[in-house]
Image 1: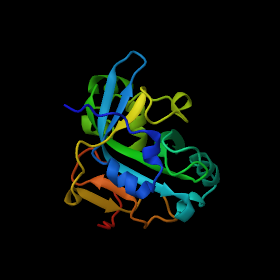
Image 2: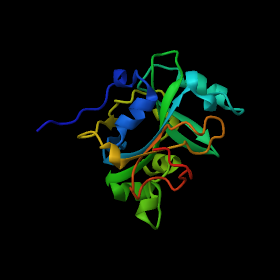
Image 3: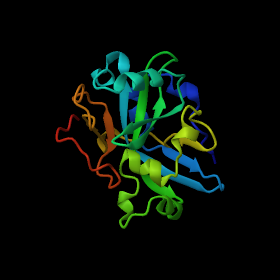
Length: 204
């Protein structure tokens, strides 16, 4: 049996829109300091590609975010929205600002530990949003930021097989004004762990 290995940094040296789609159905794995494995299936992701993305230059804080995204591909980054950390992975070659925002995962392993990190009364609310999953996995942005996306502590495994097109919903991105109509948000259609902030316009 083939054992999946973490996606290497050079995998992310590519178009983030195409990569965000390809990552659907993959697995985000977190190994806690105590050695416990927490994981979840990736059910929602958004792409940011600053060379052609108005969202990267709009607003007061986006210039700094764009500059940070220009690090080498395949590294973890965080940005803050409304005081909460959001997890992203850098894409394209070093010097080109691009990333994928990890928006939601479906819990698989270590749900009890996730509930310790982020107590909720309904399990489907545990990781159905970008800040929620950061808290549920017990991630510390200062320790994780700028580390490789194939590190033992936090990494992505590829999907066992590509997700069929009929199972993918493509929409506008969430929480932005400029560039909001770009079809760069990818969702597993009908999955209950997708974030509740669904744009009204379905693009595909």
